[in-house]
Image (cartoon, helix red, strand yellow):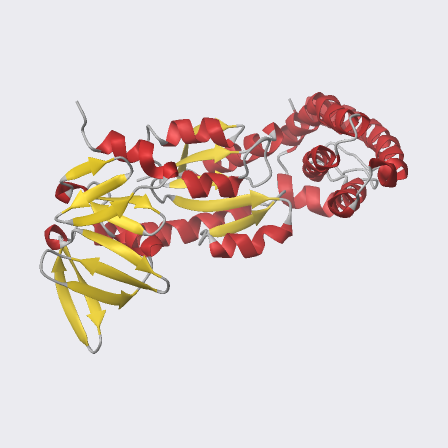
Length: 229
Length: 133
């Protein structure tokens, strides 16, 4: 199956070059090209993609602003001509970093990284449970038992109706591994099980007596997914 | 200086031919498209540089310079790209637009020179590709 992607790039020549590489590879479908972050976010709020080719320096908001505001986590390949962004790229956990102009060979190496991680994600998405390491034990958690997950620095807290488990992991990583149809990132520090939400009060979700905040950047997606009539 | 033949094309020595060879991998028809696009977009992109400089907006100037810098890379104008890179860096620390006066004039001059080089190269590419059709 082809990788579904978009290109966010304000330089037409660079975008055309990238689109040509995608077509040539036969591995990547380009669903759209956007010249700025706002237009890209408009598309991403309505469509799910596997991969974003993302420029950093653009008119208005930067590529990193897009990563702050997107409500799910597709793979990201940064495409920029400025090497100073490498550190930020690492912080945002992007899959790869392509310095423009890049060769077809370098592009293929990048896509190979995406294919590898996509296979891993696909293998995990079908599972209805996961094992987490707590102290010396591996504990099995059914997806349906998880109310929400909260970030605690290098650790995360899984909250279930009866118990809380703290384990070494990140929200970013879990967002990729948990079923996207059920779990949604509502805040930089929270992933919630959509089927467990009882009420929404302003910017607070109520889940079996727990309060979970919704950030401004994620609010629109939350409202969309709550099936409000 | 420039060698062409029915079966080979060598980019001008004024361009980074090693880079162009790697980028286009012999697809000279696509190189022709990109060189044409370069000439199409450059006036607008450099117009943004001019506008920012005349408006004394250093951060806007930095962004416009960054954009031109990227464009230069796709046609192998690596020496001009390096100048843009240096000016982009200087914009990050400049406190007043007057600190960039000489750099701006240099960019104007080099950009004009780059435009001429690419115009000639595009003609050569068209001629070469025409003989293959």
